[in-house]
Length: 283
Image (cartoon, rainbow, N blue to C red; front, side, top):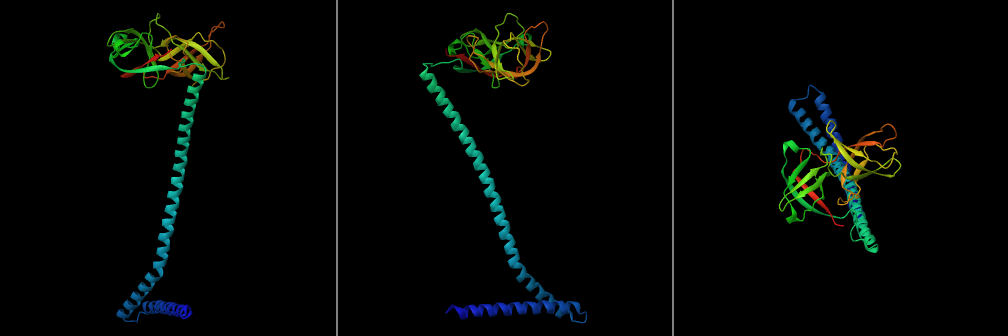
């Protein structure tokens, strides 16, 4: 039943193609023949235009479809890459949470509810900084009423800045790590050398010419690389372990076998202190 209908479609298609070719031939003939009246040339041009549209319409349609498929493919690939990055971030977050839980469980097994890294944080803002003692101290907006205690370490959002030296009810004085006072308490710090060994020492001073902290009384003479991160060791009594101090800028080997002197670029911007955090160790 469907075969006659199919034959009719084939015949119509063939006839349409023959007419199209005839129109093209006619249009070419009348356009090239200068003796042909102008209105006949117009008819030929119109016929050629109709045929051109009929022929180009499927081609343009295919081009649009091809472009849409290409855009869709690009979008799919981009979404796949974004999904891969998101999966990686989720995996990292899960891994971090797992490590936290594992650390908590280990502390419980060892009956260590507190460790050198445990501390309570108390936020405050700087209310006073005298030009005459700019490198030595600041005054912050929290005191004993907020739980501040003498000797607690103080950090900015980037790293260690100093230690609480005096506590009042509603404010406290902070001795900066850049202080020039020789009698100031010094922070115990540590870093990892080129061989993966922990190197301990003290922040013994501040070089005002280079704006670098000086680390002395070093426990090792192993090679120390520039850029090594320096943190508090937690061996200073009231300072928690792991507070970021800065990075090694240069290493100086002194004469007569004296300990190596290490210069550290502070992580915190000591010239721009507004909001700080007091890290009160729990143990």
